[in-house]
Amino acid sequence: MGQVAPRLRGMDSALTEIGLPIALAIIMFGLGLDLTVADFKRIVREPKAAAIALACQIVLMPIICFGLVALFDLPPLLGIGMLLLAASPGGTTAAMFSRLFRGDVALNISLTAANTAIAIVTLPLITGLAISYYNDEITGGVSMPLAEVIKVFGLILIPVAIGMVVRSKSPEFAERMDKPVRIGSAVILAVLVLAILLGERDNITDYLADIGLVAALFCAVNLLIGYYLPKALGVTGPQAIASSMEVGVHNATLAIYVALQVLEVTDAQAVTISVPAAVYSLFMFAFAALWGTYVSRQVTAATTSNDKQTV
Image 1 (cartoon, one colour):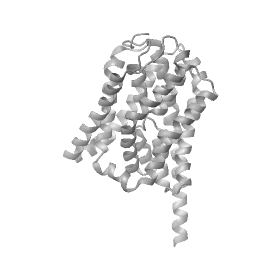
Image 2 (cartoon, helix red, strand yellow):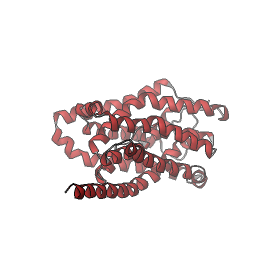
Image 3 (spheres, helix red, strand yellow):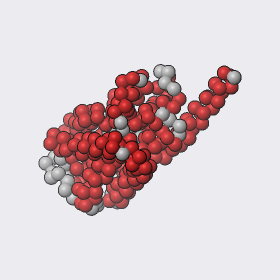
Image 4 (cartoon, helix red, strand yellow):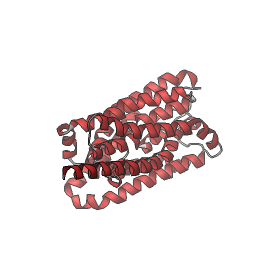
């Protein structure tokens, strides 16, 4: 068994051991600043849109991801990385896209909170199944120590709880910090992606050849199914936009953190497992922006048409 990667090939140890946990904590603190108890009650009060979106994210997308991984016969480590990404909850920037493109932002916030809580169970479960599926093909094997998994979710839930307390005590401060934290979250992810890709620049052409098409297809399918399935089941346009962004915009920072700091693997293996999340992120922001522009126009046009018919 290789050592748990304390210093990753091509990446500075300060970034992975100190910067990455701090970055993840800041992102989750930002989620907490957006959250109130009412956001959790909303899911119970209006369960249909939330249930459909969560079913897409937690059940349907990992199955589709596995199908793509098998169809394209990805190497084992990249396959684990893709399924780790699929198991990660929606990212906090999903609400930012939803706000930009006239989605139901309140639904996004509720979904991200619920999804993150559910991921305490589903992320290690799905990643563990992926590891079990591929382990015989991997030299030295891969494992996910339970103690490290517990630390990860402490790192997620504690900042969220602190953010919620801050919001309850000082809602004005929480409102002022909302935009800077969201922008900061996107910048943090961009820095991580850049660091991984620069660290692996000698192999990046091979990685893109192996994973680029799969990551792009998975991102597109996430956004499309996240929108059209809820719409087909009677969810409103703004709620369908929120669902699409929640399903398509993953917490890639969490997936990268788990790959680099939680899985018990060699240095090189850890970096390889993190690559799918990094490559997916390149498509995620571009596709979400393009798709959001399209569907927001569709929803606006439909609303205008309905208003005219009513008049």
